[in-house]
Structure formats: structure tokens, C-alpha cells
Image 1: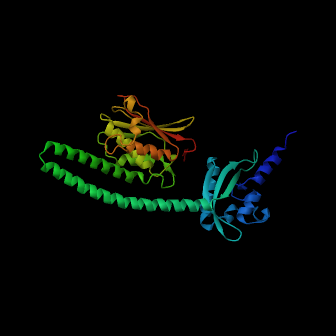
Image 2: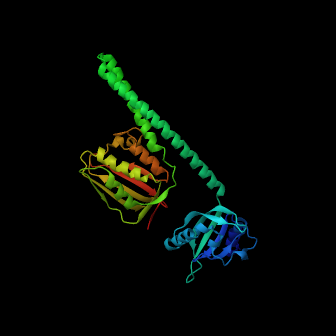
Image 3: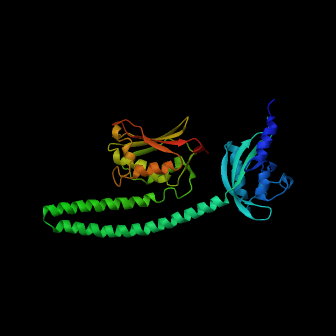
Length: 343
């Protein structure tokens, strides 16, 4: 005879390495395990059972946690969030809460299962890392500014030299020097765009609003941008997602040549959500479909689509070109399951 399932579940709950709690739909603690007592500094479960969980949270996090709890209850989707937790002795640590909706059987009120772990050390390390990255960014900005100033002087003198010399061989040498200096300028300019990739925490972004706002500020005379995505669709993305969308639309305007319209739609498929950017322009030759995402390829600085792919990859998204040559370009962004939601 196999083990009793209720006893087995109780044993897993009690021995879990994380703090475990079950709440009713208003946040009142029903059950908790040994690890939860250790994390919060209480010696007996009776001290916490029957109390609302916000009573063990830092004061500034009460409203935010209840909003998080209600979101899990209303959507039925699990979630993870960080909140300050106050121990019995008054000290506070940063806790990572994992919430999912549960059931107590037909006709019974629902419940929420909560996992809690102390991530204070990780949060401190992340904060220190971000501070270091920001300091490096400031240093990069100063150095980049100085380099660009020197390049401006260098290019100016090369232009004057080109105009002053009459020897054809010297003119050719100067032209090559100008080309090399211009290549350095493009690469230095690229570091400005790239240095902020991954610095900020990803966030939920309202996709239709983002698309409309981005399209409205891009100069695309003669090209109509139509967004056919239902309101309320959100994706989890790096804050630089706006630059990604801008690069894709600009690419269609610059490379589409004969393009007069860009249409943006979406569809759901087994492995996630697909966001589709299609135009009626010249299209992308079969041999260039992957090459266009390489660094340095394309009009202007040649980093637009390369940068777009890097930004999307931060939250697990992928981009590819799937159109037919001479029938318009078609860029597809695949958002993995869990990386999008409605409402």
C-alpha cells in the first residue's frame, strides 16, 4: 500500500527549504511551516496563524503586497515579487515571495500558496553590481565624449589636407584615413546605445501603447504604420524595448525603398506569442535574412537590428526575418510563454 497522499503533501510542505504559507483570499495565514518560523523569528505557529500576512511585512509594502495578492487571485496566474519582511525582533530582510492560487475543494473559498526565501544578500549584490555598472557607464560617457571631440578635430584636418594636396596618391591615402576615422566614430557612437543594455530591471510593457507612441515619433513620410494588436496586451521586456521597436520600424522605412505601409499584428502559438511587423516594400533577399542581424550591417551605423536582437534576448525573446524577397519584409518577434499577458 502506497503512502497516504495527504501525509506526503504535509511532509513536503513541512520540510520545504523555503518558508511556506497558505493564505485565505484576504491574506490571513492558515498554515505555515518550520522554515517560515525560522525566517520570521517566531517560535510557535500559533503566533502567526489567524493573522494577516501583511503584519510581518515592512510598513511601506502593505498596499503593494495586497495588490500583488489580488492580481494573483483575479488572473489565476502565479507571480514572484520582493517585499520587506519584519522579524519578530523588529529587524527587516528582503523576502522573495512566490504566490500561486490553490483550491480547498468545490464550493469552498480559494486559497493562496506562498513560498518565501531570504534574498537580502542577493539584493545587496545586485545593488552593488548596478552601482558599479552605472559608474562604468559614467566613465565610458566621459571617455566617449573626449574621443568624439578628438575625432571631430582629426576629421576636420583630414578634410583640409584633402583639399590642399594635389598629389593623387596622397589624396587616396587621405581618403582611406578619413574612412578609418569615420569607422571609429561609428563604433564609438554604438557604445552609447549598447552600454545601457541589461542595466535596468525588465518590466511589463503595454505593447499596443508602446507601438503607437514609438511609431508617432519616427519620421516616416509616405509610410503608414497600422497597429492591429488588441488593447491590454503586455510583454515582459527590458526598458530599451522602445529602441528595439524604433529600430525595426526605421529599418522598414530605410530599406523598404518602395514601402508605403507597415502593419503590426500578433498571434498566439504553442510556444508563445508572435509579434509580426510586415511591410509592402522591397523585402529581404534569402541570403541576407540572418546577415542583417550581424553587427555593422545596414544603412546608417549598421547596429540597429543587431542591437534589437540583443535587447530582446534579455527576456528570452527572439527575432527573425521570414518574408519573401520582393514581397515585403516580415519581422517576427517570438515572446516565450510567461513573457506576455492580457490586462
